[in-house]
Each structure stands twice: as structure tokens, then as C-alpha cells.
Amino acid sequence: MDIQYSVKRSRKRKKTICLQICGASEVKVYAPSLMPEAEILKFIEEKQTWIFKSIQRHNTSPAQKKQKEYATGEIFYYLGEAYPLEAFFEPMENHGVIFWKDRFFLNCPANEDMQKHYFELWYKEKARQHIPGRVAHFSRTLGLHPHDIRITSARSRWGSCSAQNVLAFSFRLVMAPPKAIDYVIVHELMHIRQKNHSSKFWHLVVEAMPQYATHRRWLRDHQQLFDL
Image (cartoon, rainbow, N blue to C red; front, side, top):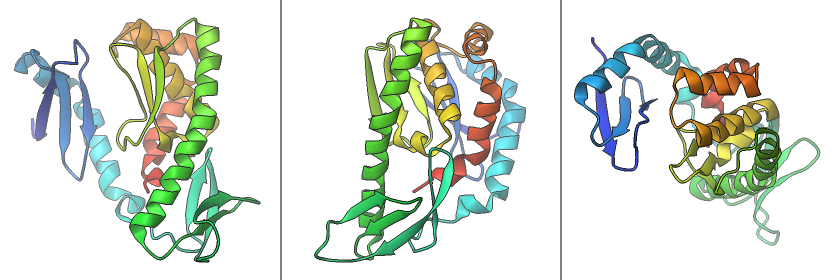
């Protein structure tokens, strides 16, 4: 097998194992601290086709290589829709991002770190407004109740469920369409019942959301659009 990978072990992980494509050919595997190397290798081999496709998609995506410039006319996403930016600097006005009449407005000096900071603040606030309400909705319908909900700055994971049933969601998720957001929420709620990605887990997901695969595929195919 030609796949080069690194393993990060954690005592917090009990049984679950997952992988992450981090660059043009970098694969990271997150595994429990006591999991045998042979079991990790078997997991990599089972995921080999997906890994190669993901790396290929990563390398051929032009959007992957382009960083945000925070310039007027640049496109930013909110709830799955694309909206243009108008960037300017008025020192006497409040600095930050506002969304008005299907357009983003950024009042900020020409400093990339500051511009990124203001956009992150805006997206985090919108994520806090949108995501907990949807979690509450699916918690009621599925009978699954998290211990807590957190909004994070995670770049490589849309969501997670801890051993203590604390759900965490990246603020970037609010850039995706509402149905895709709902899928991630259902996915993480189901981890309260099943702490792995076994066939039993996916059976629970498909019962709750029969069209989940469509939303999962959309996120995989468009995740490069949501970098800041």
C-alpha cells in the first residue's frame, strides 16, 4: 500500500477511529491509545479508495489553492447561498461585518488578520443563532439529548460528539445549506446512541434522514469553499 499516514493516539478515544486528509498527500489517523497497529492498518486499507479519491479531489480543486483576499466582489457563503462582499474602511463607523440586502459589508482596515477575525465573529454568531435551535428540534424528535452544545473554530471537522455527549460544531457549518447542517446535527446526535461509524450507526442515521447521503456528499464536494 502506497498511502503515507501518521497516527495520533488519544486516551480520550475509546473505540472510534477516524482519518483526515490534511494536504496534497498527507493523511492523519486518529485512534485510541491502545489500538493495535494491525487494526489501524486494516482501517486504512478499507478506506483506501476513499483516501485516493479525496486526495485527487484536493489536488484538482482550484478553490483549494486560492486564499481569501477580502476584496470587493469576492464571494462568501451563508446557509448554502453565495453572496458578494463590499469591503471598505470608514474609521468613524463601527468595524466588522454586516449582512444586508443579499450582500456582505466589511468595514475594516486592509489587514488580512483583522478581516478574517471579523468574518469569524460574524459566522460564529450566526452559528450560535441557527445550530442550537436545530439541535433542540432533532433532540425532541429523536429522543437524544446532548449534555452541552459548543461552537468551535474547527477546520477539518464539521461536528463531533464527545464521550460525555457534548456536541461541538464548527462555525463554518453555517455556510452550508440548511439540509446539510441538519444532516451533521443528526449525525452527531446519533453518536449519543452509537459511538462509532459501524453499520449499526449508519442504519440509525438513514432511519432518521433517508436522504443523508446526498447532504454528506455535498459537504465533501464543497468543503473547500468554506475556508476563511
